[in-house]
Length: 360
Length: 118
Image (cartoon, rainbow over all chains, first blue to last red; front, side, top):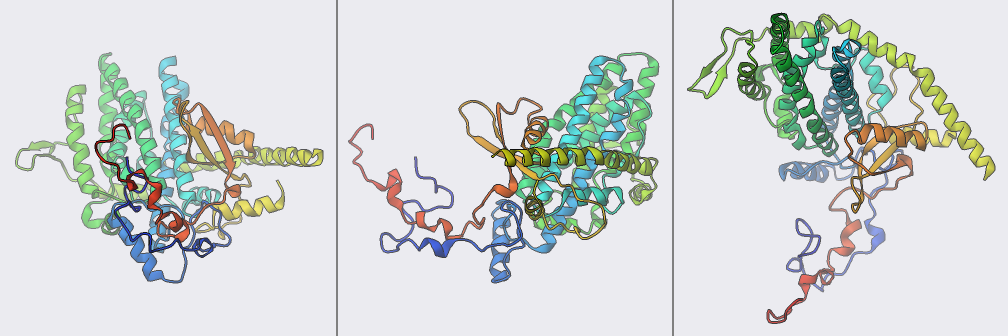
């Protein structure tokens, strides 16, 4: 077994020895970054910006992760903050459509499962807020941006959950699409984001399977239940395809994001992968996907599918989906209604700390 | 929490992209870093962070957030503002002193093949 330097450090075979002495320690302590905590990313050092940029590019090129206090271009930081914040907001808003059915779940088993799933969505949001804070963003500020409509979340959560079958279809299609999107993000170049995605992907697998199992159970039920599953599938199929974002030709950020290895695949690639995965699952379930143009293309070795209604996507993203106002109002009410709890806890903590100080 | 704690917390949780906007009050719960021992025999490992009013609440939140599926048997939480970290750059000369001490590695020493168990 060799020493710890197997990857980048010096092994006995590397480097002149003993001619080169160790450099004095005091020379080596990194630049101080006033005003920033130890674990939060800094703004980097202005001096030698060219060298820093080159080091950043090399780190990306070698497929290494960028970590919070590394120097990074402002545009990279801004892109990461926007992407992670939108992702976090999506998880938090994503609690609402399914939370709608917690009190009306048809059995204790389904209620316990649904509660666990909604709690996971909250957890995913918090992992992601934790990751975005390492870039210097402020969590309270992000919440404020969400409830004032200055930052977006996934358009999929602006659709209503009309029946209990929607809970199953969200698990199957929406979480299935999310997994397609998120698995490559586990190798995203920003370390804290990639690590949050690994944790999230492990849990999403439960989400998708519980949804599919719920639907299988309903498909074994009455004809009314089977119709509910088909109806929910019809309503969620196209919005699920829109989750991958605009087509590659209209996605101006994709190229830069792929160069920085924030993204690993284009929107259209991921969408195709999702369609290919989902068609056999629909067949096994016994539902029809609402697209007359959907058919296997042996030449391409993929399923062909119909044109997505991008005007609907733009309308919903622009704030005019069926539930946009309701989702934001609920988030705002929860945030404002919880203010006194946060204040009381802070006051209590201050009192306890003061008492402990006085006793010392 | 003293006012100096508050200012440290603000500096840790960031100079956010828009901390100047909106007159909304900021969360005054400090940021805690969370470390988990996933099972006996292993070290605690950093898993993320969270906000809490105090350390006890941070432990409870850490349990709810990071151990929903038995991922841990022990949790440490520490205020992020209390952590001192080295500079992250891997080329940082901070780590240079160990760079040329190849004699610290067992492979530095040549031992004849014929000598067993060494």
